[in-house]
Image (cartoon, rainbow, N blue to C red; front, side):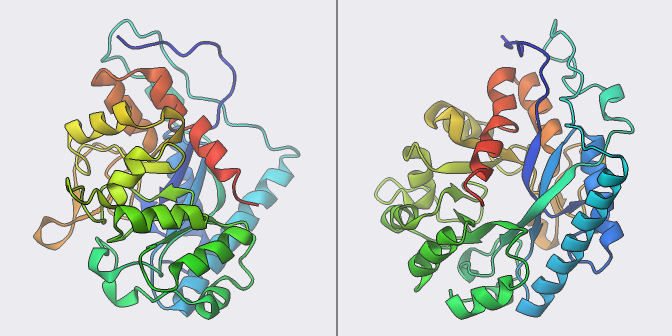
Amino acid sequence: MITEIQGSHEMKIIDIHTHGVSGYDTRTADSTHILKIAKIHGSSGVSDILLAVYPSSLDVMRNQMETIKKAIGRQKAGQDARKKTKKISLPEIRHQGSAKQPVFTESSMRGGKSARILGVHLEGPFVNPSKCGALNAAHCRKPSLQDFRKLLEGYEDIVKIMTVAPELNGSLKLIRHMTGQGIIVSMGHSDATYAEAEAGFHAGARGITHLFNAMRGFQHREPGIAGFGLMNQEVYLEVIADPHHLHPGTLDLIFRTKNPEKIIIVSDTVKGTKRAGGGRPVTGQRGKLLGGSMTVTASVQRLIEAGYRKRFLMRCITKNPERYLSFSQ
């Protein structure tokens, strides 16, 4: 039975991991493309987004961050012109007489405001090429404080999260440094053992990027980074909740095992993700998944229809990501 959300107070719906959507992504020099990504997410009921940047050469990544920074400036200028920025309300929610009734109604999504761009999630480049997933393994780098400083110089204010593989030589030192700089470290694209993931957490990492995807799998004698993420009740987990990235039983395992305050549903949408978020897989050669197929609101709607409690799911896209982002200065 679906539990109703009590009250009508405003809530932010936050997606902390999106590369793009509907023909646009962060691999662009045109800030208008970035603003279109924000508009499309906003039309689905999302209030705030972090834009994920793919690993590439340091110069290319810096150029992409520059484009995002310009888009943030343009967005802010538009908000200032309207005098005061108002919080984006939670989309209209109908009374759930049936699990098949939409939580996010068509009227609440049509013509919505743009999602506010909160900053950048750097998904690399200090990740393990053996677990690159849809990322380009050629652009995965060994952790280096010098490269980190070169990458971030001038963009310290917009980088909120960085995905790092904790098992790589030099990662723990870099994680400590990044944490001291107010950047949230998320462990991912990683072949870390349970002990190596635990060491990353103790060095300051606070999250795990898209649990189970692009990382060492769970094995009964070596639970790996995925097992650590499930069992440690303090580390936050990104969860891609479209129909393709996790088996329904795996989703159920996460929801039954994990501290509900530490689960964050993300979209991980990409350029090939359709605007409507209909759930068709976004794949490349040989059927490799390139990214998520649904916005976070569409994912939550899908899970509510599957019988999960609405109050719990809404926390995974509102309070939980907001609390997680509070680690960032």
